[in-house]
Length: 411
Image (tube, rainbow, N blue to C red; front, side):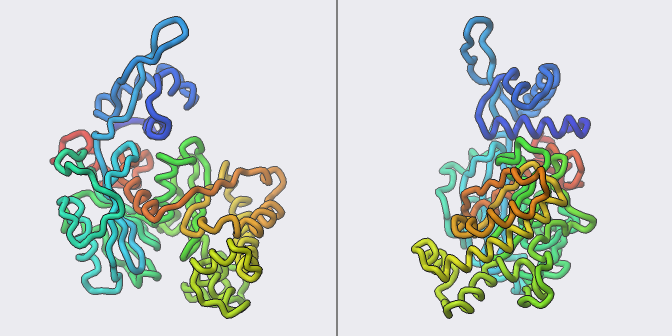
């Protein structure tokens, strides 16, 4: 799909807007996206030619000619997304319009010598429709044979990936060093495969389907087992020189602080990641009920539990303010498992972040989204679904293969 960078970005914006709010007329698209009617007409004609948009019913008007509405053709394609964790996999099957067709999970041991074979087995079980070895999280499409064409596989990992089209992973939490995830999966599955840091993948999903669709510069912060960030600048995820941008959890807080999982002392993650929260709880009252128990205790009003979250929120808020001051985003989106306890975090976070923000940025919108574990995998699927509009060329040869499958030139 040829075109200028601006054309690629506006194609993405058109699809994302229609996928989020539903069918719109060309006039409404032009108004919402601040585009000229001629540009909208040209780009929607191209998208219809690729079978990605279709004309729907006529929208009644108050006098004058009724407007033809356009909608996404979800059946134009789909992608599988896989989230890799230290003990399980989550897989989702997602249509081009963002609809989830099915979700599964299975146990996973990344330290096993057969780890990549087991990862490929899980993907094959979804592709074939057998579901062998998987536990369904949501009901899958009843007629697998009528599913949209499979464009490719997206894999999200808690580590750095220098080139998402190559997919070599360095992930200390998984025990992976230079792990050839992309190469091995492509060889086994005979499909396009894109591999990316899981937080960057979430940012790709936000840009297509979430609150980031109306912003060209935004931050995604994640809290949970670890702490991460993704920077979207001028509509693109900033990856850094070696794909390692966004390691927010390893911002130094105190050189004399607790040892982090990365081996350094006093990283942000050592204070506000799940292990850090539990360590703080044990130090206060010997609590060993686990993170779920800690959150429940805080919600029930336990002073020690509430103090743990408030202190962690303050540390996170100060660090987030520093990042906001450097990057200057339009909006910050907070995601991750930790958001289930966000009312407890907010007590410390809100005053700390506002106090440390540069004047003129203190009114920035910080939006916390509801969370489900499948969101990670949906982010991985978005790597593939965004590829047809990849103006920066981050998907490389794999992106070309995805585009070929989308327009039906590759079986």
